[in-house]
Amino acid sequence: MTSGVQLRPAEQVLVSRARDFLAAGPSDAVDLIAHVCQLPGPPRFVADHMAMALLAPWGEFTRESDGRWRLVQRTAQELAEMRAVAVPVQAPVAEGPGSTRRRSRPKSSAPASDRVPERTAGRPDGGDRITEIAAVIIERGEITRVYETLVNPQRPIPPMVTSITNITWNMVRNAPTFRDIVHDVADALRGHVFVAHNAGFDWRFVAAEIARATGERLDGRQLCTVRLARRLLPQLSRRSLDHVSRWYGVENSARHRAGGDAVATAQVFLRMMRDARERGCLTWPELETLLRTPVRGRRRRRRGMPQPVDRDTTA
Picture (cartoon, rainbow, N blue to C red):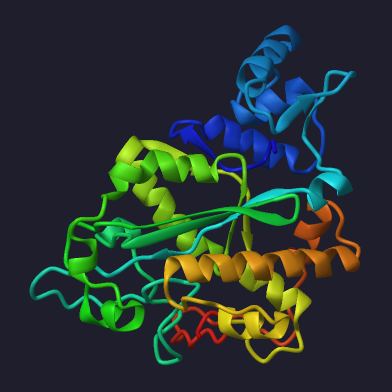
């Protein structure tokens, strides 16, 4: 799969610019390089050479017969056979003695309760670390592999997190650190769409851990099952993992643990993709259009106002 997750060198800003520019449609090399490299009116032979050198190594770009560059579009069959990976993580708040920082929710797809503010999620750049990670590989509509492991966060686990996940320091003290497992995690992610319930949260933690361990940047497609549930299941009063799983008849054998939530998320995702296809979403652009559709009844919060509990990401 050409648009799956990859580990990129952190300096590939120009590639990101090209991706954003070509999202609007195919482009001549001169216009493309003028935008990406901020070079007004580059000579055609220079633009052709630069575009080829910049984009040819990346499978998500292709050059058409007329010389224009575009993003690779997925066909309906490719979307039906997409490769995905469901990746919930357990990430505690790593507070030092005397810290007054607000405690974080332990993970996006398995939050503690309705009383935990939705926007107080953990900060991967503020000392928080993963204590458990799972990756469920999906290929051609079937779960083909499950990877899960405890992770030594190299710092204490707050009692609040232990009370929710039952993960204690004694359980992780002899577990591998993320640096020890980073290559296994990268292998599980590579080439797949990153799927999670509130994907941005899990993505930020995994990306931060990978960056610390390797210096590389996580890049690729993400698909959030919370966002998808809001479009596909408007009849539900809440779209938490528990509620969506119950709607689809999915049982979670280990709630609030990475492995159990990963398998449940993967099974929910497969059922959601079936529903999306029944609604006519057969390609990635069609699926992205669905996700961009405004959700009725949701009002934009005014800046500076307290943020309410997000009922769609709480248990």
